[in-house]
Length: 238
Ligand code: TMP
Image (tube, rainbow, N blue to C red):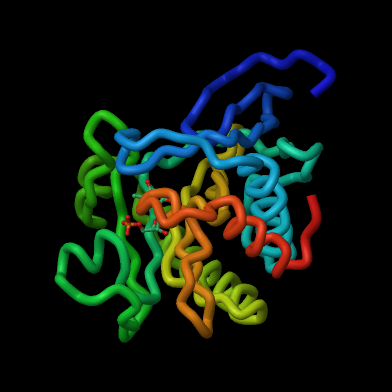
């Protein structure tokens, strides 16, 4: 980035810089955390790889008429985005039991869910992102009913689109996490944050090999290779 921009926010995986009143630049980092910051590390080239993968997927979603914050990829590590106020909830979309859902109900990871399951967490590092219900969301005023209905509708459509993309490259989309935001002036609800192996569970269709951040969370090794494999199967180059 040639021009010095004001840093607005530094998260666990990205730094957000101010570009104008309505635009920001997100710079992807190699840092990796898990279990609400308890485990810290870094994944070589993660910033470049996730920026490439997320830029591609958001571009597809834009073309599929899902409104998103993504404007364009600027360079290896950064993207130009519409500025939003993030809705403080994490939306978890699940096609199979895995992770915290498997733990909660004692069901083997990889068991297919009869229907797509949407769960919500409050975005709060201090509170450890607790799971919340739609009644919590409305009662606490985290977002209004119209927007919550839209979040559910978009989440299911995004799931359909992503499931198809990954299936076509021999990957099963087990689950993923997305976030939404409201644009500054018009308060339009749009998809924000990122979609990458950091935020999805991606298993090889034939072998069930994990190609996502669980390799980091669970010390399975070859984390960078798995991220690169997802990028290359998507036919993307850095
Ligand atoms: P979970 O099984 O740990 O609840 O995670 C569900 C999905 O959401 C999985 O693909 C990982 C992703 N995720 C994030 O991207 N960030 C988070 O902070 C959490 C808890 C999950």
